[in-house]
Image (cartoon, rainbow over all chains, first blue to last red; front, side, top):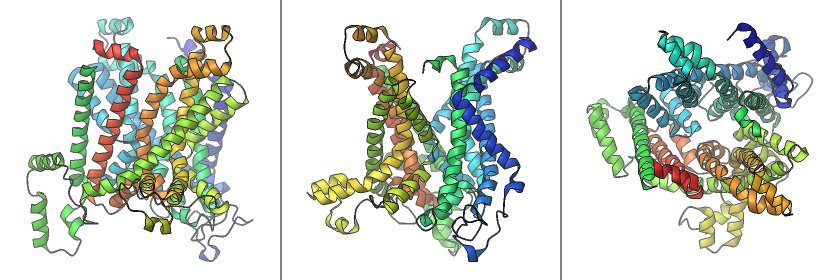
Length: 286
Length: 340
């Protein structure tokens, strides 16, 4: 495939994406979050760990735009710092599950036989537990921390990518041009990297985009249960955990972090859905 | 069909065996000495040694696993070191509240999900379609623990329409004998209608919270499946015969379009079992989720092992039942599986 054709394909997808209503809204939401997270130091009014106990649970005001929390920390500034943590969680967790899941899927699909059996039975075990529960089991083993929550969420979603890649490899493996590549002496890895992977990029991109939202939700859930971020970290799920019993007294401490998680996840889901419409013609019927 | 059933049962057993290995290894993977965790920091070495022997921790791993499996086959899941109770009994006590909550959430999701999906499909491209689809997307994007808190803030604190937490008013609770620990059933068995109404009242907010994600997914699935069926020729024929839209959709299209929806419903049960942990935590619901969470916080290993195995077995059984139901409803799958 020539570079010119590839470029025009990308241009074509980009133009479809720009004119897709939900893709546009999703991209705007996510761009805002990315801009916020890179310019946090210029946007905040207080340091995230700056506590003024005399001003605890103060309602929104000119000095504290979104009020203060139970130890007098500025909710607005913590919320902004939290955007960095959530984006990091999404990126790292999804990158981990895409890499490991894809590798498992490639190996299982390409080599088949015992390797396939072993890897896919392993995936079945991971799928035998509801995702929140599996994440809890993993965090219990590793110990509660934000890093371990990211690892847990990452492991939970490995089977999805393994299945996508395996199915794609099985489909592509027997195609004539792959057989031809093998006949002229191309190595397994060369075939996998140049032929197989490009052919399964579309479902992988869709799943990864939706996966970002799911990873952020799950990690926030773990922090909410006390199995993620450590006390004091401006993580949205933990901010909710620390204040949910104060919901009546200080609703702003609970409203803001929840809305933030919701809008970021909505952004990823809007974009993911749109990408599915555009990249996967099979689901276009709706 | 029988061959298919046997094949599915075997693969389920295999997965369960895998989960049992995972759960067994948890004890050894969790940092720290299990005996020390149970007896506490101040325990003397002799007592620790005795407990290690009692728990079989001094045996080779293979022997320990064999013992674990043999205990499991007798449904002996050990004792919690925190409550001193038998794990199997505690699961039995905490499962009914979770089952009640899960079933109520599913009922809510199915009824409103199918309704919203149908409204969306027959108004394709219109305002209601847009509104429903946006609502469904919001439903899968919202953190359910936050949704629960918002419902409490609005409907319990501000409007004072629903109780904040629990399963029954404390005074009524004293009158009800726990025969099944399914509150709706127990209040009915006691013939106490006021208590029954109160139990329903307590169930609504948690069920709506837990049911929101399945509601969103069922709505989307019903819509896309119904749209596909509405494009078929027999539907055009039905319209051509002059039948009204409600008859065409209700009598001819909906039934066929619900087949894939059933699979989604089955898959969502698994989600509900996980989501129940968060929902129960917010509403102080005394189910298996909040019980398991307490065990995790205390690193009480036996209940964690038992709870995880129980939920995995339940999750897989539900999936199996759904697959069988699916094969029963859709003859094409029955024929395919018969050919295997």
